[in-house]
Length: 281
Ligand SMILES: [Fe+2]
Image (cartoon, rainbow, N blue to C red; front, side):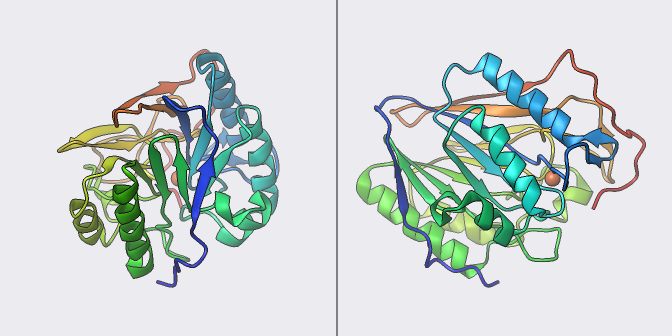
């Protein structure tokens, strides 16, 4: 792994205090041009439907977390369009790469290294955006650099009395889909060992699995979120699509360290999807 810690520094986001209102948008898989499809679904159309839903449901969005596979093939044009979708909701978004993304193109488009894989300080919270991408591989791994970075963030969060939300692309726990569990964070044991040395972590949030998961590990919420396009069926040994519609997750980070959260999905819009598809790369 070649991840480094050199570009990370806390990004301080102005906020009046009190509850921080987030939305997580994940696995958009935008293609090179509008109208591109993934397994039959027009991913620009489905993302716009999710953005419209957020606009109706959330009065205020302080920041957007884009947790990887934001493009399908790492196209610069996909990230340019992604910005226009996100800006319909908030001027502030933070991104991290998934296995389908190009970190270089993301960085080129978002224009500021501070919005890609960083430590964000907002109100009484610290949000840590980690990079679990392994170039040219589907599965994830954090590696020594990202684990050191996490440890550094957690130590400083503890000193500052902040609550922590950790975000990454790949799942750090087995979810019960054999084909996806082969792709989980390879060094998850080391990841949880770092977390266990501190007491500030309130939530861990990821994408990749294209399905909702809400579990609890002691006092830490473990959360994954539907894709804004195609969904993977839970509990399957092999690749299988689900017929659930696209969605997103909102999270309210309260000043006492509690996280209020739910997933919401688009209804009343017809999406095309090849439900009998046997694969996805
Ligand atoms: Fe994905």
